[in-house]
Length: 124
Image 1: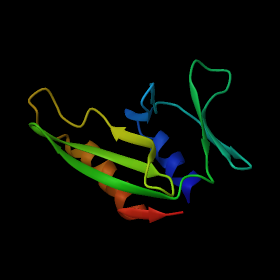
Image 2: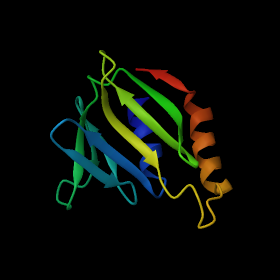
Image 3: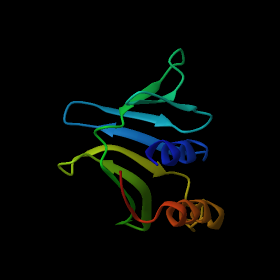
């Protein structure tokens, strides 16, 4: 189910995949990324391309769809956690608001459909 969720996320334009720790942050846009799995490793993107991720599928134990209040807007994401509750990866839906700061209904619908397909909290 993890591979399926990641595959569905990268099919959506303007989803920002973020890996973050105390020393570095990596951000990759979802546009046209492929996803494949070999043993425990899920690769997002092309190894020969300018950027890609390798995710250890054995360490991700759960995912949550998160709608977080921010000043003047709501942030929409899917966050992936290890057994201890530490975030390994996050997928943020970007371009959710138009120039007038109005929520873009089509973008929200994409988020809601994915949330409905997988449920709000997923255990792997």
